[in-house]
Length: 92
Image 1: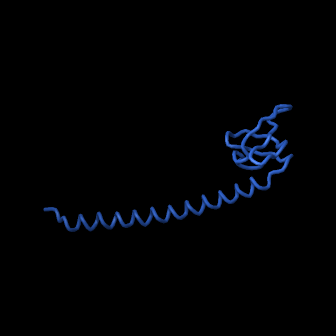
Image 2: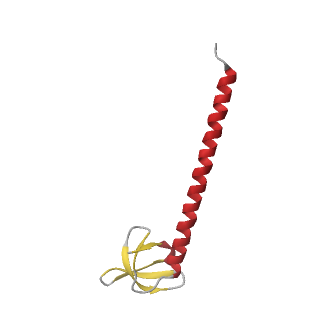
Image 3: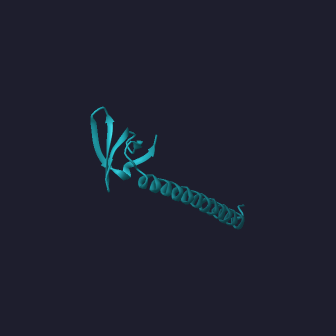
Protein backbone atom coordinates (compact mmCIF):
# COMPACT_ATOMS: atom_id res chain seq x y z
CA UNK A 1 0.00 0.00 0.00
CA UNK A 2 1.33 3.44 -0.96
CA UNK A 3 1.46 6.11 1.73
CA UNK A 4 0.23 9.13 -0.30
CA UNK A 5 0.95 11.57 2.51
CA UNK A 6 4.68 10.76 2.31
CA UNK A 7 4.61 11.02 -1.50
CA UNK A 8 2.89 14.43 -1.33
CA UNK A 9 5.35 15.84 1.24
CA UNK A 10 8.28 14.49 -0.77
CA UNK A 11 6.97 16.25 -3.90
CA UNK A 12 6.47 19.49 -1.97
CA UNK A 13 9.99 19.28 -0.53
CA UNK A 14 11.52 18.69 -3.96
CA UNK A 15 9.50 21.58 -5.44
CA UNK A 16 10.66 23.95 -2.68
CA UNK A 17 14.32 22.93 -3.15
CA UNK A 18 14.02 23.34 -6.93
CA UNK A 19 12.47 26.79 -6.41
CA UNK A 20 15.29 27.85 -4.10
CA UNK A 21 17.89 26.61 -6.61
CA UNK A 22 16.12 28.50 -9.41
CA UNK A 23 16.12 31.72 -7.38
CA UNK A 24 19.84 31.39 -6.62
CA UNK A 25 20.63 30.84 -10.32
CA UNK A 26 18.39 33.77 -11.29
CA UNK A 27 20.19 36.18 -8.96
CA UNK A 28 23.64 34.99 -10.07
CA UNK A 29 22.61 35.37 -13.71
CA UNK A 30 21.10 38.83 -13.13
CA UNK A 31 24.31 39.96 -11.43
CA UNK A 32 26.45 38.73 -14.34
CA UNK A 33 24.17 40.33 -16.94
CA UNK A 34 24.26 43.66 -15.11
CA UNK A 35 28.07 43.51 -14.88
CA UNK A 36 28.39 42.75 -18.61
CA UNK A 37 25.94 45.54 -19.50
CA UNK A 38 27.98 48.06 -17.50
CA UNK A 39 31.23 46.87 -19.16
CA UNK A 40 29.70 47.28 -22.63
CA UNK A 41 28.33 50.69 -21.71
CA UNK A 42 31.81 51.83 -20.68
CA UNK A 43 33.27 50.37 -23.87
CA UNK A 44 30.75 52.16 -26.10
CA UNK A 45 31.43 55.49 -24.38
CA UNK A 46 35.24 55.17 -24.63
CA UNK A 47 35.47 54.36 -28.36
CA UNK A 48 38.26 56.23 -30.17
CA UNK A 49 39.65 56.05 -33.71
CA UNK A 50 42.55 53.62 -34.00
CA UNK A 51 41.16 51.08 -31.52
CA UNK A 52 41.02 47.47 -32.68
CA UNK A 53 37.61 46.00 -31.96
CA UNK A 54 35.47 42.92 -32.48
CA UNK A 55 31.77 43.21 -33.07
CA UNK A 56 28.72 40.94 -32.94
CA UNK A 57 29.35 38.90 -36.07
CA UNK A 58 32.87 38.08 -34.92
CA UNK A 59 34.40 40.51 -37.42
CA UNK A 60 37.58 42.27 -36.30
CA UNK A 61 38.63 45.68 -37.47
CA UNK A 62 40.13 49.05 -36.64
CA UNK A 63 37.97 52.06 -35.88
CA UNK A 64 38.38 54.81 -38.44
CA UNK A 65 35.64 57.23 -37.39
CA UNK A 66 33.34 57.31 -34.38
CA UNK A 67 29.95 58.97 -34.75
CA UNK A 68 27.09 59.44 -32.33
CA UNK A 69 25.25 56.23 -33.31
CA UNK A 70 27.55 54.57 -35.86
CA UNK A 71 31.23 53.83 -36.34
CA UNK A 72 33.30 53.22 -39.43
CA UNK A 73 35.51 50.15 -39.20
CA UNK A 74 38.32 49.17 -41.53
CA UNK A 75 38.06 45.38 -41.83
CA UNK A 76 40.68 44.99 -44.58
CA UNK A 77 42.99 47.33 -46.42
CA UNK A 78 40.81 50.11 -47.91
CA UNK A 79 37.59 48.27 -46.94
CA UNK A 80 35.57 50.40 -44.55
CA UNK A 81 32.11 49.46 -43.29
CA UNK A 82 29.66 51.42 -41.18
CA UNK A 83 28.02 49.64 -38.24
CA UNK A 84 26.14 50.59 -35.12
CA UNK A 85 28.46 51.44 -32.27
CA UNK A 86 26.39 49.13 -30.08
CA UNK A 87 27.35 46.11 -32.23
CA UNK A 88 30.88 46.29 -30.79
CA UNK A 89 31.45 43.51 -28.28
CA UNK A 90 35.01 44.12 -27.17
CA UNK A 91 38.45 45.46 -27.87
CA UNK A 92 41.41 43.44 -29.04
